[in-house]
Length: 245
View 1 (cartoon, helix red, strand yellow):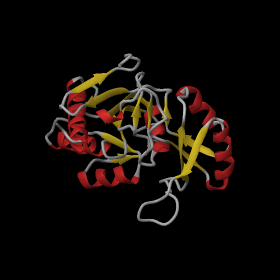
View 2: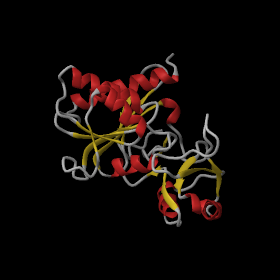
View 3: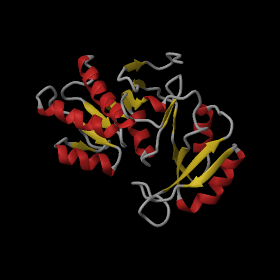
């Protein structure tokens, strides 16, 4: 039986290789690279396929300092969404997720990079999510908290507004740092749980309409293709709206 970390490593390698075989990843393309413990093995595998000559002239846009640092170490050239070479649009984005619903809606932001991740995902022709089997759930937001990036001055008003929507908020605190987590954008994060299931698509819009919210971790407007590896090492590729159990 594979450990969770072994599942993450396997799904990352399998997804990159499968996407190359399916010609969804190819030389010269513009790729968005995500953040976190599953995305990092995917970045490393991408670098290996560049090093072995399978891929050439790949242009990367990253979603965090973590990913930028790894790309620098591995020699993957990094661009901004605003660079002329990118032009605000990507061919493909690949990232992990914290929860995946049956229709491939996801929660992201456990690594505090949800705002940049959503910019990348929603401006990509193809959105790919890779995950271990523990991330597959029936409903979003009742077990893993939804991250909400906020402006510091709006903390209490936003908490009050989300409470009216039925969400219980906790300000995310730093580890090995006194005080709250600060995102790469200089903002704070609320983690929100619901006691009862909610409509993620409707809630994505409602939370973003609250003054002081920068972005939230519901990803529903662009459904990804999902790769999931289980404890037995089996990887499945799931299209959006596949009605998976």
